[in-house]
Length: 206
Image (tube, rainbow, N blue to C red; front, side):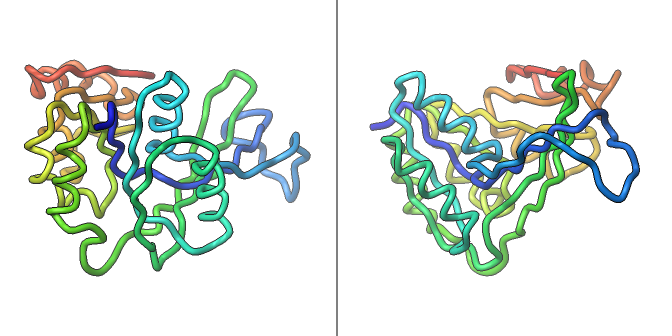
């Protein structure tokens, strides 16, 4: 048994500190040291839960590339159980521009999945059955596996900066008991969208 099963959301983050968002237009801009580390939403949830002492399992696709090696090395230093499939398109990457106030703009390279599903429904169902809670990242490959999650005890998801119109996000929201969403694009529609998802719990962030 595990306390938390995280589906999707592995990648690497390149964090760049900039003087302002958007950064000044220039041929070059001196910034503090830039590094690449494990990142993206699923990794953040899994590693935070692990740091809190929870038993964590993680399922996703990962490229056979240097970015994937960064992710594998970081996970190997933990007790997080991993079930990984090869991603022919490579490992997801994000460049995060961060201003002095901590505001972030993420330039996300999703490396879309193509081809047959990376995990059989029976394999995912067995993993879900062993989990107290499932956190679902809005990965393309996971969208087709949503029916398997109906047997989960509880499910959460993060819609990020959803605009309220993109139908891609709705199936994730409708299956989740706990929905995280940013009001960056929702604006005044945030309360209305939250009400439509009731009785699910919706947590907004700016």
